[in-house]
Length: 117
Image (cartoon, rainbow, N blue to C red; front, side, top):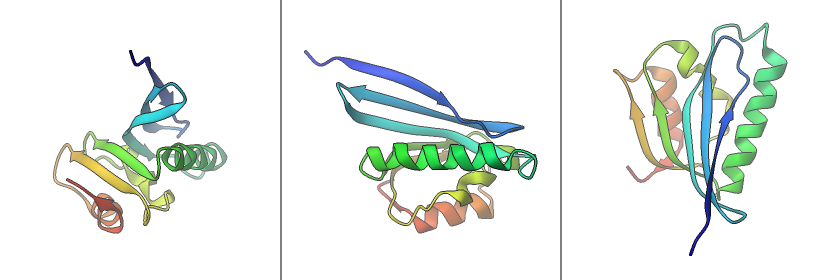
C-alpha cells in the first residue's frame, strides 16, 4: 500500500500570492501544482521573491522539470507576474488553467514551456 503525503508551500512574494502543492510517495514527488505566483511590491520584497523563485525552481527540478498543474486564479498582476522569473524552457506543464482572459506574461510563460494540455 502506497503512503502519500501532501505539503503546501507558501512562497514569500510580498503583497501577492504564490502556493505550491506537492504530493509525495515516500521520497518521490508524484504531483506538483503551482497556484499563482505574483507580487505588487517587487522592489521592496526583491530578496524574498528571488529566494522563493529559486526554491520553486528546485521543486520543479525535483519533479523531473514537470509542473503537473499550473493555476492562475485571475489576471491581476499580483497573481502571475513572477512567472517570468522561472526559467521555463525545459519545464513540462501537464495542465494549466487561467481564471480569465490570459495576459501576455502568462501566454509567454506557456509558449516557452512544453505542455501536454
